[in-house]
Image (cartoon, rainbow, N blue to C red; front, side, top):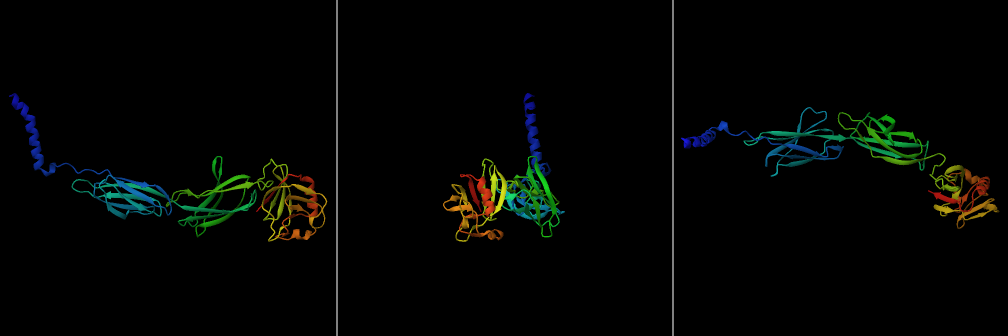
Length: 342
């Protein structure tokens, strides 16, 4: 009796196994693949590519890649391949606008059909260029040009400057028919100016911005950023044919000047007044201040040349009107820095 009770569970298992072997409907259900589709990166700038990788597919299974871009109603087949032994496959694609990618694996006797999706955002390519006078002085104009690709004719764009509280829009406009626009904006307060062009998201693209453009804006009283530690400083702008006299970093007076002729240019660089000659005459005018060998700042006996432009007539010296050299000579001690800038 006890032996019969012990054999009953074993016989029951054998009976069930026989039924399963003889009945196809009792076979195990097909396995569900755990497909995963990833994109790297998930956000790209127009014209860039992303890598789409599927994992979890059956080894050797055919996997297809489809995409549905913004504005499309259906998915479109864009690739197919077979998964490797590890169940992975990859594609590199360059979508023209934001959209969704889908990967699908057909089922078989062992595995069920499966799919997975991933979204890829596309940013517009925004290019900002700027042209500004050098140095850029407060109140002078900067010419900004913005170009967007893909084309967005009529799209709203704005320029923003970086502040302590974040990005602050300061000029709004719409792109022309060729998806670009040039605007002029006066430089605001002195300091470091950091600007970018920005564009809001639309149906096809993510919100995005251009690279940063940086420039230093100088005060009207100190357009060249002369440090305040100098009690006196002479700065000659060789391109403007002007001499700027500074005290403690502020421009006190600006003078027109004549500079070196072709072949005898006024030297560039930083120097110091090493000698003052109080009694001069002829081409030197009433006074002379030497800063490099015989290179000097002095008066003139040809004042009419100061009304021409360009004023490159001297042998390398900086000529002022006689009234201006008299005024400057009284205020500039030996040792005063002289900066000749391009």
